[in-house]
Length: 226
Image (cartoon, one colour):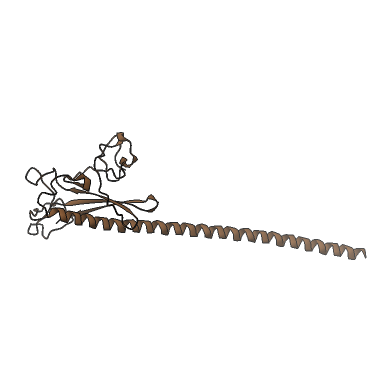
């Protein structure tokens, strides 16, 4: 009888131990499932953020293309009028000289090596006045943005000085088709040893800034001639 009681107690002890082990494994499994769910959620959030950022960037690039085309149309209208582009038109974001040292993004200028910057935001990009040479280059801002993006541009004529082009005021022009270098290459604004074509306009540089969603900012640069 005593042996039976001992066996019963032993079986009950084994059953409790088995239940404890099962409970332990169940808890471990739940922890693993929870960690996996958290990892999947984090992965989904990260993927969504990446897709969102790419979408914002694509929208900004599309807006910059539209703004560049608008700037080209503006140039076409002005170039049809003799002498219209020989002087600065700051209210329209146009400058008759190349402004080669212009720091478009405001990231290169320093107190030790000061450069002129564009006053894109009306506050000189928040830079300390001791870190830039001047902030007098004003952009043109169309009243209507492009698909919710704020677009601005600055146009510079690739000439040494304002005024008419002459021997004292050289401008970068496309090379002549009949030069020794062969067919004109529009990607070579300096001529690269080619003869410049006097029948073509100087090069114009179009700098576009797009401020989109979440204050994302992109810059593009385009060279054109007519």
